[in-house]
Structure formats: C-alpha cells, structure tokens
Amino acid sequence: MVTSGRRRSEPPSREREHERSPGADAEASPGEFGPDATVEVDPHRIGPVRMSYSPQTDGAPDPGEVVWTWVPFEENDGRGKDRPVLVVAVESAGTYLAVQLTSKDHDGEGDFVSIGAGGWDGEHRPSWVNLDRVIRVREAGMRREAVALPREPFERVTKRLHQRYGWR
Picture 1 (cartoon, one colour):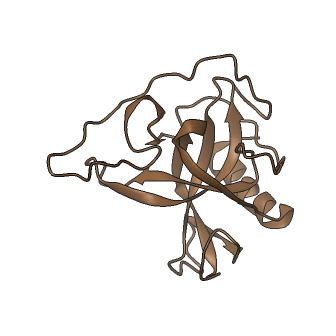
Picture 2: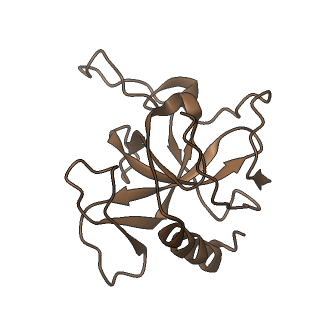
C-alpha cells in the first residue's frame, strides 16, 4: 500500500541492481547503481497507490515536488541519464513513486500531461509528464530537491494517473 506518510524506520525493498558497464565514468549519479538505484516499475503491478499533494521545503522528497535522479532509458539496457521526475506518492517501504518529466513538446499526445515551466528546468522551458514512465525512487538516489509544482498541475497529473491506473 502506498501512503502519503513516511516510514523511515522500514528498510526499502531491494530491486534489480545493475552493474556498471566497462569504460563507464568512475563517478555514478545518485540513483544509478546499487541499493538506491532508481528503477522503472509497471504501474499495473504495484498495488493500491494513494497520491497526495504535500510538498515541504525540508530537503526530503514529497509528493508534489520535482526532484532529480538518474532515470533508465526506455530500452532498459543499463543506460540512462540524470533528469527531473515528479513525486506523486510515498510507498509504505519508504520509497517514492514518480513520473518522468520531459521538455520535448508533447502537446495533444494522450500519454503526456502539460505542467508548464518551472525552476526544475534551468531554461524554464514548458514541461510534460510522461504517464507511461512510472519510476521508483529512493531518497538516497535523488540528486536534489528542485521545486514544488503548483497544486493545479499536480492535480491534473494525479487525475490522469487515477483514470489510467486506478490510483487514488
């Protein structure tokens, strides 16, 4: 069950960890490898999810905040890059569910929700949430807390996630 509260005393569940490819840079991005690795999850297989808007400027990730983490490429071949994600829920294991952001124009595409521009993008370009890319993030796997998304675009995203996956 996913809740809006944190349970920091519970250890996060282990997911697939991937190995560094030969010739890769010596320094990894937070969330790229090991027990704090960021992973894509099947939103139909994670059970009930309770979404909430509860950003707090405390350095910890909260639903409604855009944070940066290493995100695997869709090919799931071990490659990825550091990018912004919108946190939508906190899981009971202390992990976070997020959806990937992109600044590539996806206006009118059904799998994307426009959230406007914000401080998560240095160039303040308009951004879209990709409803198909649900990411499980661990607090130690995030590079930084970026900014709270205003409530109205967050609620547009959660409404679409509810329609698509039955999340509350």
